[in-house]
Image (spheres, rainbow, N blue to C red):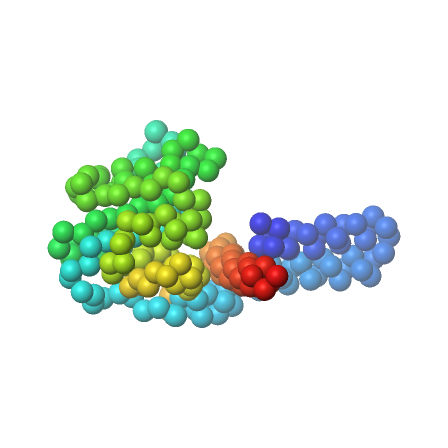
Length: 246
């Protein structure tokens, strides 16, 4: 989280305050201006979408696929358990989009299963259970749903579902920005799904007001999260290769 755009901007402000305390006005001004420019650029929609587009454009929306596919896997996202709210409000936006896309595809298949994944984390409810409840409310039959409560991240999701798939073709649903990393992880486990990206954020809408705003910052943070995740994945692969050599 310290490497997210807003966090970096706040760190720059803290450094500016430190130099101000030390009465070094020149360095304080440099870091204060750098902070303001950094946050402004990261909050500027054309720039944030420039970061997101290379991720979201790698896999096109899944419009056609074999009708004999048996499994649709929806990767976990996030939720907040609050019984005073409707289920749609308890689900995070990415989670809701992913599940809706998974159900859309499921209804076009013959005798297929919906696999939902995710552990509870700091929340009392496992994410897979939350997805299952939401799917039931949206009309999916209980016998069509397979909930996997143990996986904590994408790699664990890939490992967990491998035993269920039994080398059969399947469809993988996740956010468009997350799809490149998810496909690399699944491929690394010997799994080669049909990619079904959803929750596209870089839409290049002509209605956008091109001034810095919180939506632009959110898009930059989403892109940064994925780029850092891909970097970490490469570091892990490098470490594993070195370990094998030894």
